[in-house]
Length: 260
Ligand SMILES: [Zn+2]
Image (cartoon, rainbow, N blue to C red; front, top):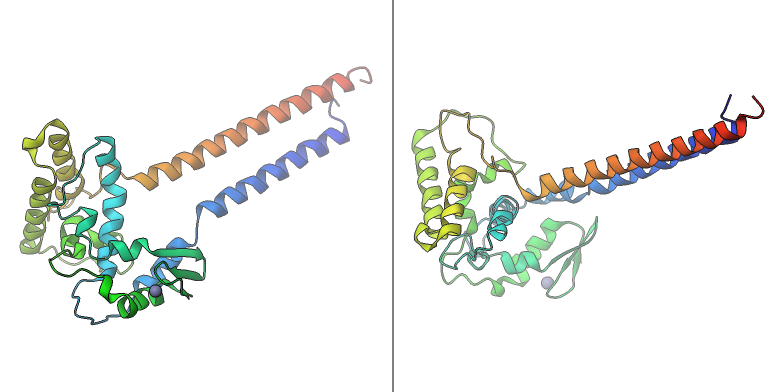
């Protein structure tokens, strides 16, 4: 036998180390963010004179950030503030940006540094203490475009499959197409034209009762990047393992030869 007992132990240790690394990479990629969000998204109804759902606005923002912005940035296009998807037109954007998720059970208010156990309590705190920071002078409710952007798909409270309502679908499609035209006016040049087309494929085509077409068909940022990272880490690890194994095997063979 070429491999002595010591080399077998070496290989075994390498394997253990690889498994350990794999476990670390898996645990770090499945962050607790998702769980916290599901708990918090069932936030309570509150009436402070603002009739705009924070939860749905957040869902809309998530979709814009994940399925639209990467493509807008790629085209180096600047969305105008006349477009309802512009950050300025999200009533809650400033507050959301002042949310600090310090630890799993620690959410901090960026204005007054108070901390909370759950995101929903921070939301309530914003509603109660920092209400004056919401500029409600003109309609800037991002939740209003939820129908066009398929918000229900990213919210955990997604309704059960109901029969398709052609009138509602028609309204959403119309809203979707008007967003495409106001945010990416085709007269503005090739990149606007590009993005207009993209927007229709990514968001508007799925507004149909015939099914078949899925929203976000062009993909998004996080999905692809996470998958990419996981796959490259796995490949690198396997490669390293292979080389280590080969090295040990050859060394074992060389040392073992005279004895054999
Ligand atoms: Zn505060």
